[in-house]
Structures are given as C-alpha cells and as structure tokens.
Amino acid sequence: MVRLGFIIGLAALVGVLLSGVAAYRVYDQELTINGVALARAIDLHASLVQDRLTERELLARVASGLFRTPSVMKANMLQPLRSSIYAFKTDFVVASWVARLQPDELEAARAELASAGFPNPAIRDFDDKPLDTRVLGQPIDVVMDVEPRNAQMMASAGRSLDRSLLLGPMLIGAMAEGRPVASDPTPLLRPDGVIGLVLAAPVLRDGGDTPAGFVTFSYELASLMLTNDDLSLFSVVLKDPRSPDRELIADDRGNVTSRVASQNDPVPSMVRTVTFGGRDWSLGYYAKTSAVKRAQQMAVIVATIGLVLTSIVCGLFGYVAYNNLRLSREIQVRIGFERRLTAVIDELNHRVKNILAVIQSIVTRTLRHGSDIDVARELLIGRIHAMSNVVSLLSESQWQGVKLKGLFEARAIPHADRIAVTGPDIVVSARAAQSLSLLFFELASHSDEGLSLVGKHPNIVASWEVTGEGPEAIFHFHWEESNTSAATRRADSDFGIILLDRVAPEALGGTAKRYFTEVSYVYELTAPMETVMDTSERDRTEALSAPVNRRS
Image (tube, rainbow, N blue to C red; front, side):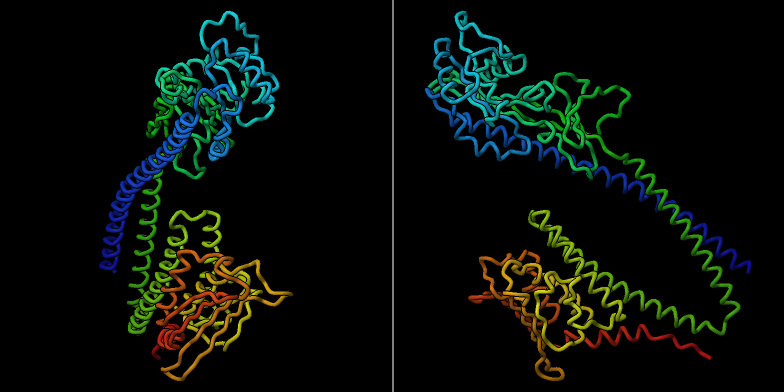
C-alpha cells in the first residue's frame, strides 16, 4: 500500500507540473493567435475602406471628365451620371454641379434654373441672403444641378458657395490642386443632419487649365469609413482632422458622434491610414476584448482542467489498483474489457472523424468563391440538417444501416411532397447512407419549385432497382424532374456538382451522369450492391456491440 501511495503521489506531482506547462503554453499561444487574428481583421477592414474610398474618388474623376464646356451653365449636367451615382447607395447622400460663373453670366444662369423648374432660381448667397451682383468683380461658384431632385435639394440650386466656411475653401483647394479634394467631416443637408464628407472634383475648360466648375459628391461617414460587423474583434474610430484630441465613432444605427480622447483612455490597438480626396485619414482600432485577459482566462481554464484530470486520473488509478489487489480473479476479464473498449473508441473516433470531415467539406465548399451569404446559409443549414438526419437514423439502428426510403423523409429533404419514391426498401450501409442523404438533398434543393404538375401530383420521380444476384448485383438509381429545363432549373452549386459527379459515385464505387432531356432533368447513379450494402461494416458493428463474455 505504501508503494501504491508513492506511485499515486508521484503521478499527482507529474500531473500538476504538466498542467502548469500546458497552461503556460496555452497562454502564450492564445496571446499570439489573438494578436495575429486582430491584425489580420484590422488590415482587411482598412483595405475594404480604402477600396470604397478609391471607388468614390474614381467616380468623381470620371464625372469631371464627362463634363464639357461651354455647356457648364445647363441645369441638367448630372443627367449622364444619375445611374452611376446610385451604385453607391449605401453611403451616397447628394451630388451637385457647381458652375464657376462670371458676373455677366448670372442672369443667364438664373433663366436656366427657372426653365429647369427649380423653385428659387435667383442667384443668392450660401445662407439664402440676396447677392448684389453689381459689386462682383470675380467669378463665383453657383449650384446649377442637384441629385436627388427632391424638394429639399432643389431649394439649394442658385446658391453661391464662395462664402461657405466649409465648402468655399474646399473648392479653392480643388481648383488649386486640379484634382478631387475632400472636406472635413460636417453635417449634411441640415445642421443636425448625418455626419459625412463632401468630395469636389474640378472640371477644366476645354483646352485650358481654368476650372469651369466642380462636381461634388456627399457621402455618409458612418457607412463610408466606420462600418463594422457587430461580431468583429474591434471597434473603429476616425481621428477628427479638425482636432487631434477628438475621435468620431458610429453607433449601431449609423449615428456619428464626437468624443474627446483623454490621456487616461486606452490607446488604440492599431492605427491605419487611408487616403481620400488628396488627404490622409487616420483610423483607430480598439480591441473589444483584452487579449492578455483572454489568454489568462484560457490558461486558468486549462490549468483547472489539468488539475481536475490529474485528480480524476489519480483517484481512478488508486481505485483500480486497490480493487485489482482484491479482485485478482477478474484481471483477465478486465483486460479483455479494456481491449474491447479500445476497439470501440477507435471505431467511434473513425466514424466521428469521417462525419467531421464531411461537415468540413460541406462548409468549405458551400462558402467558397464569394457565394451569396443568404443562399449559402440556406444550403449550409440544409446540408448539415441532412447529415444530422442520417446520423439520427443510424443511431436508432445502432449503425446497422438505414432503409433507403427513410432517407426521403420530409424533415431532411426539401419539397419531399413533390417526390414520388419507388423501389425495393433495401438497407444501405452507414457510409452509403451518408453519401446518398447528401445526394438526395442536393438534388431536391436545386429542383424547380415553380413548375409542379396539375393538382397535387409530384413532378419528381426517384426510383431504384437491383439487377443481378450475389457479388454481381448492381444498384441503379434514377432521378427525373419533369417540366424543367436548363434555362429554368436552379443551377447546381460548385459543391453540388462535385458531390453529384465525383464524391457520391466514388464513395459507392460506381458511376453517375446527369443530363437534360427536352422536358426534364435526369440524374442516374450505378454502383455495385457490395458497396451500397457493405456487409463487412455491418458485421464489424455487430461484433463491437456484442456483450463481453465473463468467466465463471
């Protein structure tokens, strides 16, 4: 007993040391992984923001190239751009054409605005105060066209922007640099409006370098730079270019507010710079969770699990050793039982790994190549549900196989009420059941829902038969969707094509083909019955489930 206690104490000491080492390794790895994941997520977000900004600046450059003088005084200059503008409907607010007019052109501009139907065609100051055109000695910038043309925006036509504290310097900068220039963050449309940015691109006169006017675009700041996923690892802010101590941040509803960043506040985890409108913008990223705290929590969990496992192992070891001393007559029986348990665990691991591999393939193939997220989610849920259904059926039969007709249950196959199932009710192996279940789901989920026959008759026929006997027996499966064609039927996904043409036939050791007739879509699968039923797998399962024979 003393020797047994010494062994248990030594095992406990080793377990404590291993738990400590494992906790330290987990802490270090978790800290590294969290840092890498955060950096990658931030780089991806900054790259997406820069892409959005580049697209909008490119639109401004293209728009400025479309305008040609001497038609700058027209009140419909934005007509060629109206369809392109709304490609950025997530953050676009308003666009305008600002003509640079000489004092002697103002009366003609007023007449043009009046003929275009603007409610107040008078040339006036930015704050709608009358503008004395007689004292003007230089060109002024006047709004001549707007988009969208609603009541609020049409009221701004005819305003001069030269005295605007925000837009005036921006237009001067665009004129001086000869390229698109962005304004500081400012409320759009009204003093309490959404915070956004205005981008102005100069339009040069033909054959000269003097601006004939400007085309401006206004965008919401929240969706332009601060949009972020609720489940992401960080929150993003924009350093206010007007004040180095202030930050702009958007809430869940897209409302942008300004806050003061004091010295006691945490510093951003990372800062990235993006370029827009001829200036740099600094994005600050704050991690939503502390990587160090998370790593410590994981290390504590691992250490706790290690100590618990050590206690359990030591307790079990002591219990087993003590009982082995008392029950020496059953040593051989216990050895046999442990061997059987090892075999069962190996078999369970084998089956679980196979299922996990299939699920991993389903998830990877479904979400590959930028699939539409709503369609991908629907297919992913359906495919995993089909796998869950067949596993449930196999569990009910203790993995002895599944009746083939059971794979067409409505809870696992979409549109099951439209499928006519005919064929002998054969029992297929666990491996074949998993492949066929996914195959049937893929066929049913891509069937044409809108072309059912008259009444309640199904427009899909699933049939099978077995030809030959003994080792030469062949399984033939035939799927036919009537009243459909390649033009109307929902196209098979990449995953579906691989499953139909390669995975399912190879899993059953057979061949498959799919084609369209003049009035239907057909899929045929042929495989040996030896692989469809797989009696060797069933015999192995029966042997593992048999009770252990105990000696008398």
